[in-house]
Image (cartoon, rainbow, N blue to C red; front, side):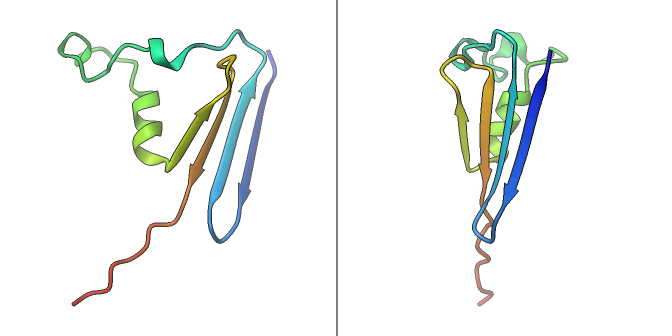
Length: 79
């Protein structure tokens, strides 16, 4: 199975795209990693991490392409 990765960066944002030829998946069907029944499982936290780290996350309808956007955080001036 082939996988394609792309990264682009500007002063305003960094865009990362990952796509493969697999069947994909429906992100809405992933079990909630914060559910008590899933807390001690050794997997299932990748999507949660992506949503917490990135500013924008987009899955293709087929579920085999992921686009992630990160923007620099503005510093708050010290008072």
